[in-house]
Length: 330
Image 1 (cartoon, rainbow, N blue to C red):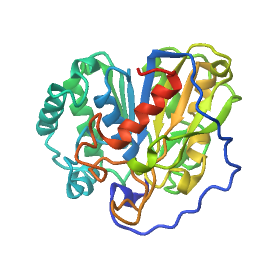
Image 2: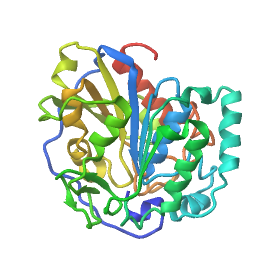
Image 3: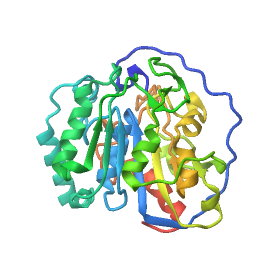
Image 4: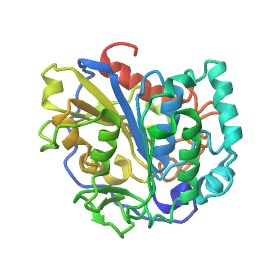
């Protein structure tokens, strides 16, 4: 999620977080309400969130995108990815819509009509120079053509750099640095969850458990062996719970920041009081083919040409983890 990650090639050295690792558990299923499954993402994670949302629109009932662009923006080209899909410019929204419609007709993604009533929350900080505002503009424009216009919330007036704004966790709002979480007195996680789920119970201390869980077949998808999973006490006790999938940005996985994103996003405090599991999938970096030295999610095609569909390796792994949490195919 460093400025290089959307994808200017600039070297950066990042130290992994030194906190004690979360306990690992065997696969456990929970009492999942399939009507309460949503997704969010930051930077390259916003692109992955959009791909998940479009590919499995029957499953995801809402999305939040922070500093990300429209579905299939890169069109399988890293050059387009590091060009207009990162810096801003004409991304050809009409072509992207045609592709989405073709994939839906082929069954490679779900029926786009499923999106019609999904809340969409899109955010771009006023101080963000890593991703051009035109990129987020394009995401808002594409979604406005897929769903009712009043279902799209587009926030562009918060003074924050390229990072996740929180109430009080992270660096100063004007500081661009690892782990790319910024204390801005702005609770982005709570605001977007409210947009997705309606009136929420007040946030409380995250007194549940932050666990590590296996990402089955993750190696084949250029992902790490484990993801993080926040489990509220109510969910552990068997109450009906939803799932929120939170996708980190480049240089923001456990390889770089340990559990800083999973512990500091602000999501867990809301999840605890609102019966939500929070799944934090983790992508791997690679300095050999396929080149992904900064641990970005595949939004330009480094895994295969089907990366933005149900057959995309990373999409398939995340969907499998959701099914495992539910103990059934959703």
